[in-house]
Image 1: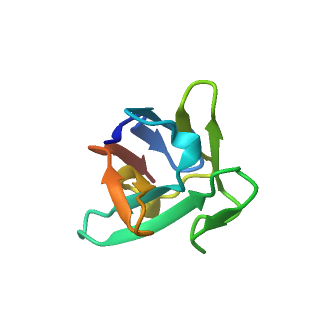
Image 2: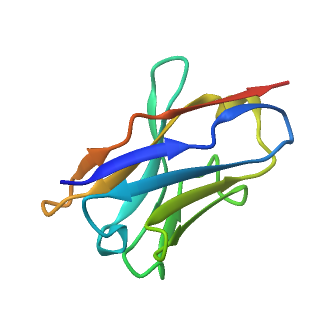
Length: 118
């Protein structure tokens, strides 16, 4: 089992920055494909970014490309999402997730709220 806990959310003005963290326990996160997703106020669920086990490959959704950076610290068993130039449209609950053996997003954190005001 993998337990994931996000932190780092908050309220910022447009143009501001935040770094989200996701702490893992129960398993080494570097053995898993990891990702960030978000749920908007309209209840839409969106893929944000993902990273493979070696951190050699990363993927981003078009709305965040160039502004968000996904990374991991294997020594701390953590996943990060650095967000800059935040926009009101980035307001959402952000979740980290880990991919299981069936290539499905099997493990999820509880989410952290990000609110961007104009």
